Image 1 (cartoon, one colour):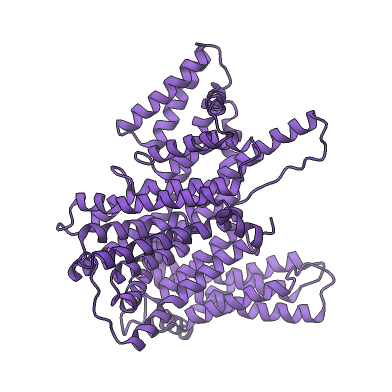
Image 2: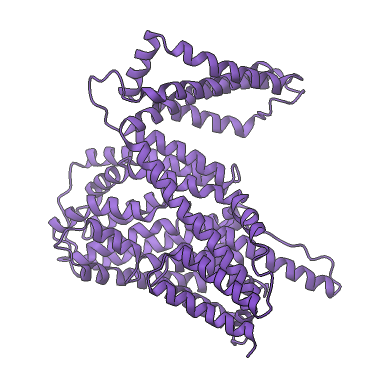
Length: 602
């Protein structure tokens, strides 16, 4: 056995041992990689980490796709504080509560809506654990069924787009597919086939592919709960229903804002209006508006305790307002860029001075403290602007602007100012309520964790490949019979077992870059289908004991009457249903590939 093979085996053993000993994942991956890079240099394998700077800057820091990660994290954490889950659970509970298992069905439906708008498992599980678990227990639900339903509903955010796991997995699948297509192109050219055209896959493809499988999983959950409530009514008894008209009205009111946010974010990605990063920024602004709208302000307050941020806020508003005004006034002229910058500077200097007048200060404080007019106006303005961009070319630096385009630019400027007004009030109000600082802190923590693991995983995979580990894995997978069937089954089984001990981020960033190019190199596996299967598999990592994160989240907020054993036992049927969903997607790949072909024309 050659030294490289021995080092690869020792590297895997050392990684497992360090993880089982409790060392942090990021430091384990980076430390083991550096250690075995030094050992590789000692046996004559030099240059293992020479490409690390290019891998980090090219694969992480300058990757536009990964810009969506902090935006989606901010969006999810902000919606956690916006009481969306509470409003939805109350409305759906009143509508479905009279049915056997109705409260559990309501929890799954709320989890579906939150999955499509937040994608943060921890936020969803904690929110529904605090709000719905006590009600379910008082109604007479079996603790195991109640706990399992909440945990399973919370994990839907990992398969229903938009979600962080789909962004990370989509980026990895895209890179793996490009690598596989490059090898296939070289093989085709070597065989004299110059007509081979490499193809690409994007995060938007994976979003479209995961939507129907996610809904299939939701349907499986609901069918199970209906059967459980019918066969064992004592474990999921119905509750008295409130007035139907009030329940319907409350449901429509609770659904309106989240559904609009889902359409804005997911629709813009699926229909190619905006890339994931830009769509995620729209979702972040929408979540801020929604949180500010639901924030209760103390009556009678005319001034908020954030004077030190007042000048910064007005300066930023002046900068954006001046830039908008300059762009519209000098649209189509040769001095467009110069005058836009000049007006932006003038706005930055003059607006804070004007805003210091007593009348404007008191009026702005009143608007920030009372009423939702600015929030509603900003939401309406953003919707109008989105519709206008579909039919008007707003590249104002062009010299061929017509009269209608000038008029549309002035109208768009008016709506931009309204949107800025409402967004400014929303941030002002969220900060005064103590929401914004918490959201920013959590966003930085989660984003830093993800990118630290990304950099460590890049180093680990670089050293692993430098030692020839990818060739060893490829040889093992190719030795399996079944024309790729057993190879894919082996990979899925390994990912499922790793989910008992690792988070989805570590699996997606360590395992997928190694095995995905090998599987896609056959040319017979659809990358979107593979990505959907892996996403469903990674979703189970939140439920599988002993280290399923959803189990820990719920344990932290569940009452003492709910034992840890109840939580573990409650998630087992839902883990089985997730395996059934994987089998369905495996047997009928069209469930995952049909929608990308329709929406994206592939």
